[in-house]
Length: 110
Image 1: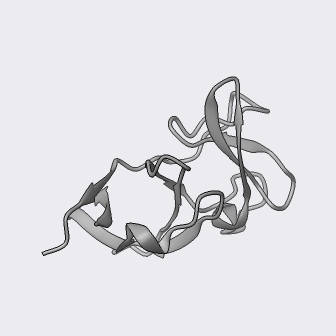
Image 2: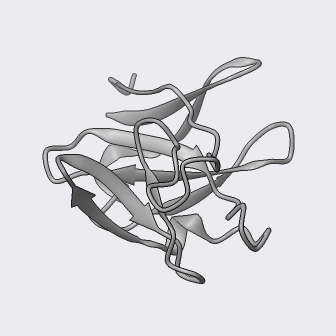
């Protein structure tokens, strides 16, 4: 199974699902030069958000700590610790701030 992100050009294969470790993210360079942070939860569900921390401008969200608050999966920035909802991209600590989210799916490898 591969993990794919929906980008302007269509579905982009990022990596094998087995390469992702629950609780840890990976950064993916996208065709337009931006970056996505890709995660998988313990049930195997993948998530993808923008990798750039909007508070610092650093591309570090893939290195953040993954957790759950009120049933919502999030990643906490490794720099200033703001938490971002992995489904909506909304900052749980400042609702005026969001990061991009990407549609993500798993696909059988051929």
